[in-house]
Length: 129
Image 1 (cartoon, rainbow, N blue to C red):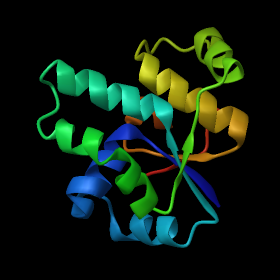
Image 2 (cartoon, one colour):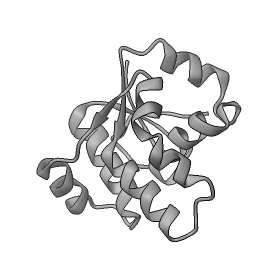
Image 3 (tube, one colour):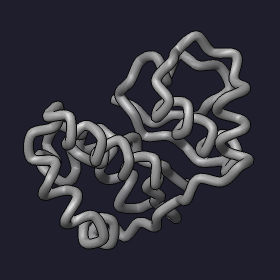
């Protein structure tokens, strides 16, 4: 399987991996591909700047090391992702969730998340616990 990590999953794996179920960690370890969105980098930087993410500075300075440590590759945002995110008929307004959902949809990735608003979206494949 090919996976895209939601931002909260990335943060939990980086700082408190036990918050992610062992079954999910095992699936990720055995995955053919693990991706981390560049949208997550912006979300982390923004929330850190606004004081909403304690410890975010460590994630920002260690971004490349963290992504490499997951044996993941970064998934950049493209115009196709952004156009899809903006056009989705979905009442959820969080732009980062929209970007991640669009990337997972277009790239055919399973989105690893515990966000029930995302798992409720029809047509998206998710891995949750």
